[in-house]
Image 1: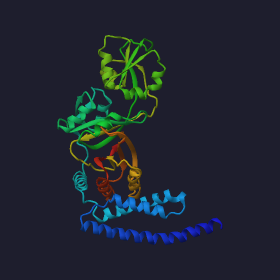
Image 2: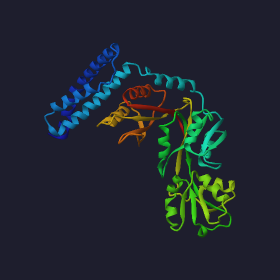
Image 3: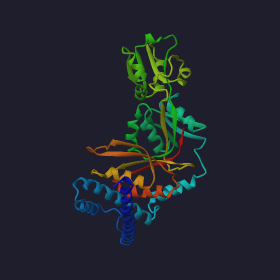
Image 4: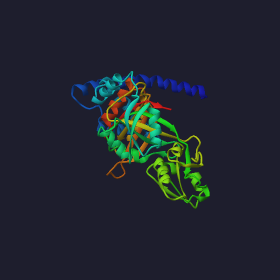
Length: 383
């Protein structure tokens, strides 16, 4: 048989498969009706395991047993999605809250003025990101990222600004860990181009420098430059602006700071090196968090945090659900689950209009199937 004959044979098989698939989905809908009438959950793990074992046994080809299980795992995922659609995508309390917030703020954006919490001191990159998001922010500086979360959660500040990832150094893991411990919603995000400079007291030369201060993320982003200074001690500070302030207030003349150029005039320092980061296109993504759910106009990104069952295929089932609902996955990050051995929290960034029915269906399905589900907000991003 040539290729055209083989393709014709596949077409004939598909002509038989598609009607059977549609018939199966029709029966699945009847199952959904029965479950609704008898107050039964859509997901039945025991039944799904039995079915997978049954179809695998029917595969006489040992090499294809795994593929058979994979096929039917996908079919069952589609069946659950179809049942959820019948049971109403807006049936959960969370789905209703999301829809109500999206409608309430559909014609609004972030206010021009607000009290905003930032970590560090004047000149910190978080404050620069804040000024990109707000026209007239009233910035309150805090010593740590946890303090920023707490200030928002307690209502001291309406919003807070936090770094979430960098194009060179990757995710800010400590912020991810804190996200699991605090109640908040992401309302906006912004990408800020980060150009690191080496600053010192006027009159100090690069050859004089014996110690450099900066934040650990900035140190990672400038690793190539620092590797060329083997005799210089690198000391981690809580913030790049705090590092510049520390140099300014020090009595030593052999210290420098990796910080933003804005800190040069702010703290009366001189420039020893410009754009000392590894990559010219160095960007940090900051999120703006709030205590209340506010879904502003144009929200097309959503962040979620899930704990999944510790069993084979659990993550695949989530990913296949995104695919079935035509939802684009932008980021997947895993972090160790606190007080648990070898269990993980999964952080997702997805791209989908908050106004779409598929998005609400996804929220309802994930909320009902995940061991722990945290909706972190829907928002748009400023580039």
